[in-house]
Length: 283
Image 1 (cartoon, rainbow, N blue to C red):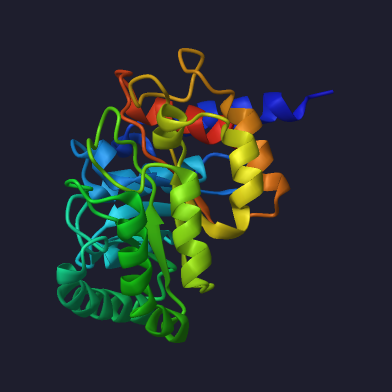
Image 2: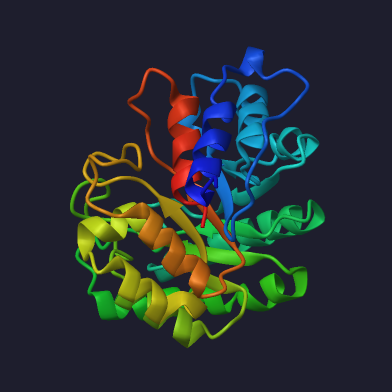
């Protein structure tokens, strides 16, 4: 009797094809409990159309981090622009400084309205860098700023996602670099439309304890990103985490959002890597 794992392996292998070889008949896909997506920037060498064709064939349901000019392309393939950019601010300059708030509110109003009109679920935002500011002051300022846009997000049915990033390797001095700090922001804003973007790659670098942290904070999380540690590469046996176990832990919470792959493939066949990631995270 064929096991579920064998079925998944067959489906992933069938999905490994170059964009020009996909043909009209997509491979058989096994549906899992997680909605999987992929970050556009990790495949810059490939056209968005080809990425969408491959993503659809593999079984993914969304494309992350695409701008408004690209949303129609993604949607034409039956995929969701799962994390829209921009929302407001940049990694270095965002809500932790009061002097930024007026511009950020205006930017968020524009982009939440655009996302709502396109029926997109999420927009991205950031805390900003510390630059000598205390975490307590920065937290208070982020809460103050996000409180100014939460009602609009609630009315438009778009979730503002505050991203957790590591400050150890990739984004030195970034303030929202621990789950506990981000969770305090979410709790104090207290809105169903202001949540965390929990990037597993970044939080594995900063604090580890991924599964327990996810279980304890799932109500604060709207979206996930993946990426292997070390190196932000494939979700394979060169990495620290058991990604299938992580996927099962997320699915067991009843999570209904997206889990997006944001790793940089080192394989000569990046679509093979993406198909394998899909297989690994299918539970």
